[in-house]
Image 1: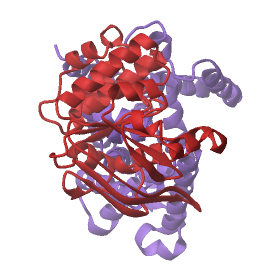
Image 2: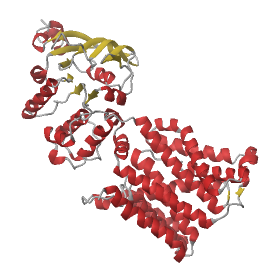
Image 3: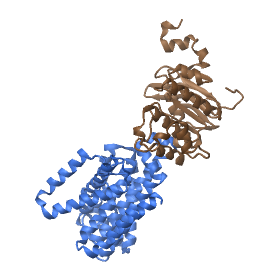
Image 4: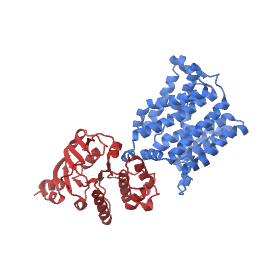
Length: 242
Length: 306
């Protein structure tokens, strides 16, 4: 992390409720350009909700999201995409009946990005060249995840949110995608990674935020986090904490 | 050669030439006219259903609105027929705008709400209290504009424009984005697509197409009742023809109309007593064995169907 940099995203006291359930309950954090931030926490701790609010799928019920100096909470997703935010989904969501190439074409045509990578580059870099003209429905789960990622990259985001991109990838694929994510961050892209695979998180992140019940309970490196009693408690239950 | 040019040359041009020349060699002009009207309506259904996934069970609402838009202009303002047809299209667009809240619904809910909306428009138009404007349930009789020949060629022009629009959708990033919205609206928005705007454009375009067809239909028949131009058969036929051929393609709805409406008339002429039976079996067979339409026979083999 480079503390001298201005954060590209600042989340302050974010609240998101579903009925009486507080999925996010006063969450605050920031991320700077070029940083890879990990969001970790047990199931239901609010990681994906945070990503959904930041990417415009949900409007926040309280608090503020500021992207690149302008308030972005409750702004429609496609407008946030044009402003430079994009994401992948926990369960990849490609346009199934369109070909891989067409999937990327839509994002290139409508993403509003100048200087976006070409289709050929994206297909090559994310190992989709062989299946470029097949319908997305024919791809395996790992390939669909890569298609989700290339769809996002075609809009040339400055903030990329990766929701469990690594889940289900084999060790070789994990190493490879870790390298790709680091290379993207090296270009100045801010990246937020939601992940359960701690080895993967440790390999790529500069800093992690540990969430529990919609609140931040820890911020720092993963190596420090795993020694925090409070963190151990939420992950493993009270009896393991000491 | 670009795909779009190929499609214009090998699909649109032959279709227009054939339907422009057929009245010279085939005497049943009403039948030819109905073919052209259904080609327009099936492509109109294709635009909204094939490209965005909204099944317009009340599609006839736009057709009827166009017919009455035409009739009111001619009856009250003595508007020339071609201009009145355009007004019919605009009336359908206005109705489409009024019904945009329906686009918040999806699947069967949208289909049912759309059907209810078309019935509401029918009963509004057929209301005896509006006799002074729409002639209410007593029907419309237009004498000044009666000219089936001109109406027929106007229909061919609208058919050409409609097929042209579908060719554009099939070959443009715009059409691709519409299909993306149909496949997954959330992902489409993350590709930067304004999904509300895209759905509106497709909805209003398909409304316009049906409104123009309705206006031309009113011009052609000149005498009609609300039940005629708001008949649910128009919606059902247009949907069945489009599905039979295969939606989200250019050729599917065309093939669907030519084959299915052809068979429909053939049975009607030769063995009308078995009409419902044969037609019903045909449609059941389609749903069971070819849910993605006739074109899927080719696409399953990996052939590309425009």
